[in-house]
Image 1 (cartoon, rainbow, N blue to C red):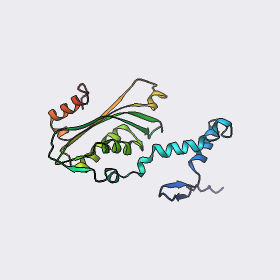
Image 2: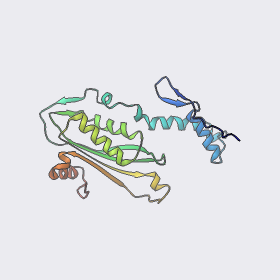
Image 3: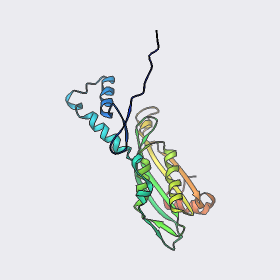
Length: 209
């Protein structure tokens, strides 16, 4: 008996340039609901597939965001060489292993090299990388290395603290566990005094990077 050849669904490109599939996300969500034992036609679930599609597109909009566009010329020449810190930046992301959220605080510091960036741009960069399928470690590195490259800074430090629903709702089910990651570049890596000053200013003196 001949083996049936498996074919991948045909890809389509939407008007906004985003690749999609012959089956929309909402169709796939309806199928998942059925496979979970639910009836997508019942009253409470009638609009759920559409809501899920909209939510997923919003939570992964970082794939469509360009860092250069976000910075939008907001680099300003200035004679200032002291540390700049933006701390307690709220972020929300999606674990790429289980498609469950993780969320927390991001702390960013950098040493300017003859130019600074508009302060609102740092949270925007955090959001751009957070709103993708991620692991916290990679997210931390992406933010730090992007800022180092775009700012031409003498050093950059990023610390992220997050709770992961994939640990809280399933698996080990530890509701109060916080994952902490860091990435230090330039003077933040090579100069202990600079690194310690950064950790002190963000209130994390007990943390060892």
